[in-house]
Image (cartoon, rainbow, N blue to C red; front, side, top):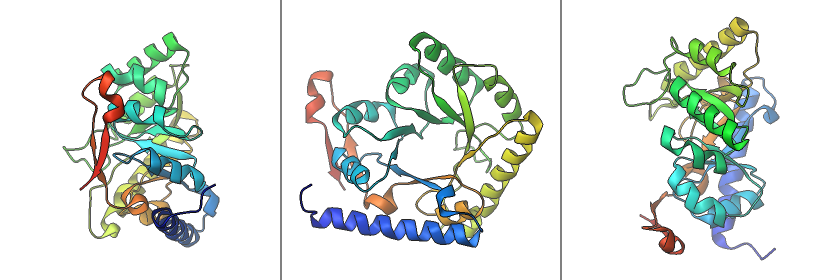
Length: 253
């Protein structure tokens, strides 16, 4: 392996800092550090960021948009497990199943049906999380907590899908303590639905760069971290056509 440059060293320093804070949050919650996994969110970052994450031992990576992932993932190092963490439109389910192992933001029964239909046609066996809009913000996607039990029941009838848990996005708050009730409510919902349906929902995906410590204290098993890990987010410029694919760029603003 080539000698690390300054940028890679900086990345590894940020990663070490994040892992230390994750471990401290686990200790405060009397949880083992191995109970929480980091998903590195590479949205708008180029293949070199994916390489740095993989070489540093991060095995799970997240993308927000199917279009960007379709342009990026084939050019990246092989090995990571890819999570789609952004909103998935029904007309993009087929390419999403070609790229991602885990679909974290499944937010409607109609989307569940489409995922199952394409999975049955292609032989894909996606792992899914139901996105729950715990905060009730109109600007956010997700099932309401009241609608979620019906979606869970529906998912359990779809053999091509594996329901692994729940995800949510808390409102952005400068004080991460203000997000604690959102994460606590998702955990409480998970516990109640496990009892109601007699199933395990082991994955709670909650917490991002600004609030992952509180999310861990409230039960997160996956935290989705981008900016705190990679630094200032670049702007992704999509290719104009398939012939133009090699000329896409990631521009730091």
